[in-house]
Length: 208
Length: 188
Image (cartoon, rainbow over all chains, first blue to last red; front, side, top):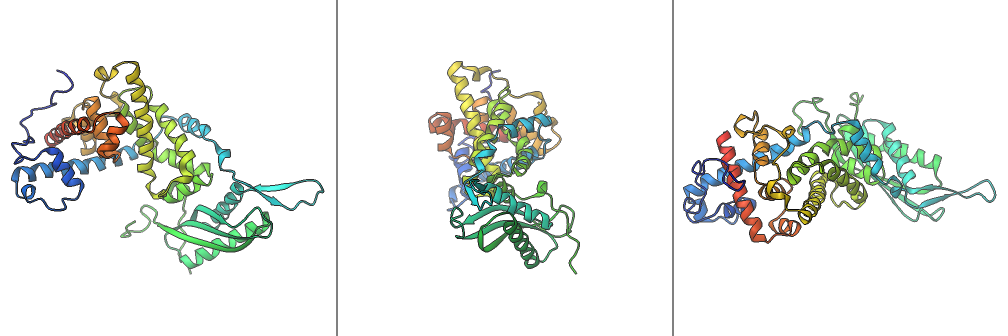
């Protein structure tokens, strides 16, 4: 048999226009794609179309199941696979600009990269515990000593904590680290909590 | 007194946190992304490419491009579908390159044995049955169906990427849908 022949008994389910009151399986699939709006009475009133639509809908559900199963599959065949990917990425590309630091040694120039400052801020958040910092933004002219800089961080907070307390602890930790390692004039630290993380099996009855 | 704080590991972080950290240069966060989506992208690449020794290469290429483009990702909560699009593009590039060299498509084997049961009716779960049904589609049908239904492509996008007329894509998808429905109804 050639690969284009139907795989199984073609009469198992009626899917041709004759069976679908003149509609095609594509039209029905497109109808499903647009959430069956606006309603089409010639489809909604056709028994054949309704059977085919049900089958298409089940197919769509199963597609989602396939994606979830793929994602749950054991990931790389071996550790070296992950290592190879990580060796291939250009880590330096994220360093950003050099932010000047005052040097006590005459003639020596000191600087810390924007990437390193973001790393400091993430690390500060991680030491607080029970939360993870996401994206970090530095607004202001970091290259000009003394210029006001505003720090904005995204954060995901673990379940069971009072958000105002956590936010206050992160801000303190970030501020301390920035004072210790940089000369930035930090005028504000904004924390944007975008997710409450509920550990699997930690709390019953809480939907993520 | 606060309740004890549950440990919150990077491995459990949501997509937006991971994508944000990786965009800022956190390699550990990117490693979590690679582990979390590596299996999904390999399965996807295997479906688009067919049995091929290019699967690993395409997926590694996907992650390298993803790392470079993460800082400009508009919606970091959509990492999965964004990665699938990059992977689709990497695979299609390889399919096109193959086409230029020889018309291998006609006798391309459907799928490697590791990827699931060969017979749909023997599958244990619905997802396994669907995976087997997908693997039994002829290559062009399979490619179109996977791009449309799993990767979320539009008809026009599939046509542009595969360099086929939209009408051909519609025809292939129509046959793929009928084949998939029949296989899955039989499994039910």
